[in-house]
Length: 151
Image 1 (cartoon, helix red, strand yellow):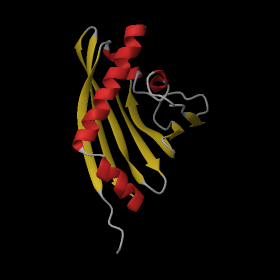
Image 2 (cartoon, helix red, strand yellow):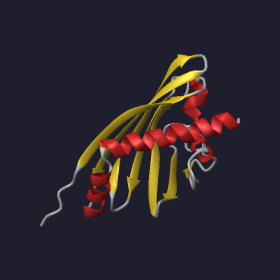
Image 3 (cartoon, helix red, strand yellow):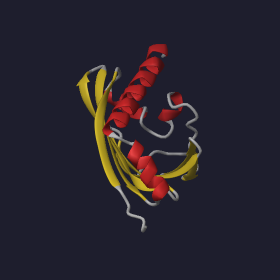
Image 4 (cartoon, helix red, strand yellow):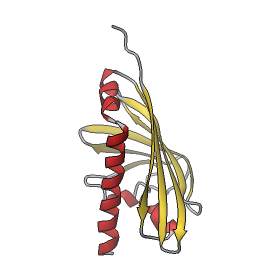
């Protein structure tokens, strides 16, 4: 049977008890170190990891290596888009958009658009249901709450 790629789009939001600019930083390669277990981005270009369009880095998590490129970002507005490639599995984008709810609260909208590159990718996307995505965002929200409570 011939491989047939799948495509999924998942969007949802979470609350962060921080001003917009601070909340946005939690969704940058460096900022995720504080709340994502095992998140250790390796910067390829520029090597200092300066957040800007064109930043290239890789991560190793859950037994997979993923390559990332910042396609655009506007930290002042709390927006960024990351292109991600997990070789032999899937390719897509992750978009972050922050909206200030108050001086100390931000709503973060996260959108994943992913296309499988293989049957392995199809299996991964099959498990990336709307419910699983919602659970992931809930875990993110809890992890960031723990981090900000300790700050």
